[in-house]
Length: 351
Figure 1 (cartoon, helix red, strand yellow):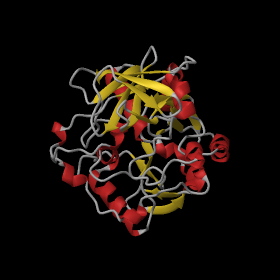
Figure 2 (cartoon, rainbow, N blue to C red):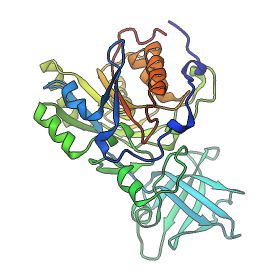
Figure 3 (spheres, helix red, strand yellow):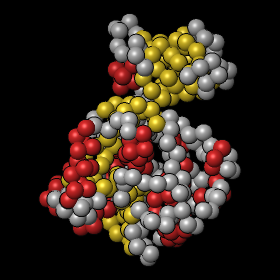
Figure 4 (spheres, rainbow, N blue to C red):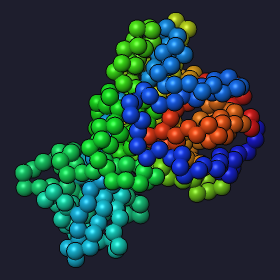
């Protein structure tokens, strides 16, 4: 088996191909059909005809929270928090940007009139994240405070400040469980009309939850994949979804994961038997898939763990060729960009 390094997942991407805004309509994006040796350029609205009755689409129904918070230290210095997860008792875990990190016990004055008291680092005293207690005089919980005063946590490669349109479009139409700081972007292409066409086609639907963390945008800084420490995210696989997968298998349908977060969730469950908890699964070429047959996914950052995941599923050489085609044909990249459709390859470890 080839020993891949991070450099094997690099590619040249003109900055102008990074989508800064969504397509005018969700399902109006392009779809690169990469299931065969030769790529086919399609519209995302073609998807119902590319799936078969009895196939099972599995979505991530997480809801993006307005996790970016701004405020000031007692000294007057600016501080920015990006909430990674909400804990019990009004506490949150967050990334913190400040010219000088405040000491534990410091209370920050946050925009919107609430307070954030620094309790320490997380998950331990050497952790890279920080634990805060959020509070205001009205006793609102963190979700209410973020909904009222937070900002949409747009990815670092989107260069404009969040707007009302981002609040609507950086969210799937079926988001149900708040907790993500990044959208499951492949699912952003689905609208109610397209879902209705899929229903009419006889394509079944199920959902899982994975609260996408900011770590999804972190570059892999080690050349050896084995040295990379994967970020952890909370997931849940409902019993109804497990039953739907069993039914799909029984009727000979395909399990179609909508997005890499759905892949990570399903394969975490299949690998461990756990239906909920934290996962730090790192899927690289050579991984033995147990659930996912087909993947709908956006185009990902060079050298990212997501490039490694799609290469594990569809074959490294095939995926890199598809990316070269996408660049040449001016597909739109990343969160607000276009999508592609991939099947699992039996030779996915071969470059």
